[in-house]
Image (cartoon, rainbow, N blue to C red; front, top):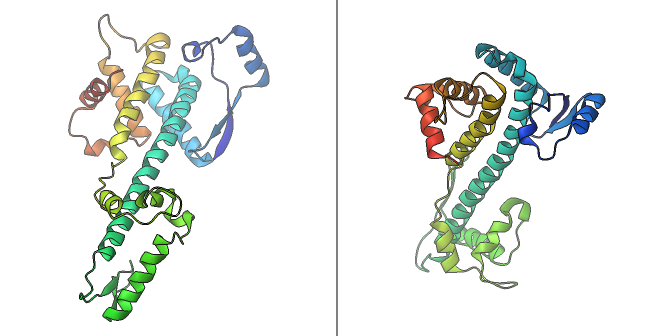
Length: 262
């Protein structure tokens, strides 16, 4: 978390605000700027962004738009940060729910005459094995009954664990729901990043067209120089890794925006 004060020229940003009037702008200028509270940037990250953005804008002869571009990029980055965090949390929750459901379902299907063995693999040590079948059965029964009795820390399992139970207060673990959860295919949040990247480009393109020399020719929706700028910007923000892109930078952006056109 980092807070700072920014003073862009809000006259240049009028397209991004409804009912923005001159007296509002004058009041902001009188106060020396607007406070900006960043949840996904610390001070070091913010300072690095300032330096890198300044270099990028100089390269494209946009240095006179630094304050405005910084404000817009931070606004959209914070929005993306919130969305990305939510997608990542949902992904991690689904992964854990799938693992728990698979484990519990497997325990529930153990036949009475089966022998059991429990293996635990620490990340930095050798596998720990419990070979005694009776003790293993006792351990797994304790774990299963604890979950079935809803005797578990919510901070560890999360509320998604309740999707494994029959409806109603104090319901029992449902084999059907455990099976359904064990077959989950969690959606990798990396796939969610592409439309957010495209949204960042569309968001900034309005400013480029209306306030800078990176405008558009009639009957075009994107220029090569805009595409190259967006590629460099997304790389700078570490949304993409240029070394993993097999196409030309501008072609990558053309394809990205075409796939997620508004």
